Image: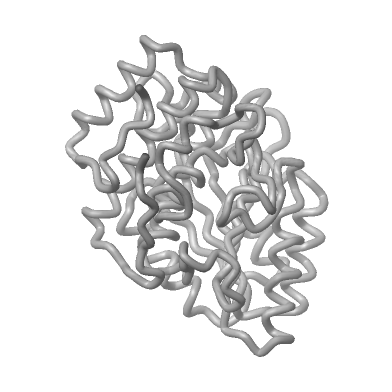
Length: 296
């Protein structure tokens, strides 16, 4: 039985440490999905640097020993099908044992295929019905302003869900209310379930749309950890709602998954899991974390 160890809520790892940490999280994602036989590897892997930097880069004030601490920052994973990458980060941060990742998608597990509030500690909202996360996050940001609390709210959106009308209603409302404590991050991997975003319902000009709604926007390479860290620092310090458009690659980190939309919602086989983990072990970033393997 592993031991849950509490992470330091405000610790900030170096860029190299964060790269290694993201590599560990990717390995957990591959292991979890291979064991479950189902899940969404593509959108989980594309968000690895974004989620890792939030939890371990010193941006998200949180305390795994007190998951309901009132003044914690909030993180809403609006693209709920990508939750394996969040589960990996939560386990490594100490919210629950790493070995619990093996229960993904099993009956009675706390780790279901989409986030469910009130189950696994650290999950702030139930999501997966796409398009609702920004509305939830805006409500939390406005509540913090009423409470005169400094807590910050981060919302990670998928690009496909930005086709939902509710996203733009929330964006317009945030632009009007202008909370200083709300950051939206778009995981812009250019694909959705049925194919390329540009062919199904093009989002461009995406940055201009956010700016029109009253947001300050910065675009970055979502797999360049230095750019991710710099972008998050800018967003937290910015006065008013801030949006980071992170250009990413679906399935990033595993060569046969990267950029192949087949892997939107298909779990790797045992043989594919072995190939993927071998690539992650050889990519030069190393691993950082518990050292526990979920696969066994």
